[in-house]
Length: 116
Image (cartoon, rainbow, N blue to C red; front, side, top):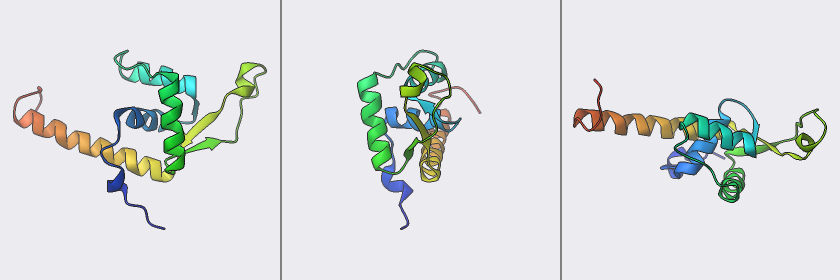
């Protein structure tokens, strides 16, 4: 079954950030929250309930998968669920990043943001 990447665009900002975070490797929910905070220099803080709602939708859409791998560290790490981006999820987030790039180029051409 061929899936249409364009049907997922534009991605909701939260979904984009979750997918973008997972392009660097699998993470648990709190790891995604901390990575998004770092990526956005603190401008975006993901609320856990909204995060897990997004993750569930991304799993249902085949963009994210729950990993069967668990940390070997004892304690809370054993209870954490880890998530990874699927190949199709990578294609979707890459298409969205390209769309953002085109929008940024258009904004530069109208001198709304600095750049070439």
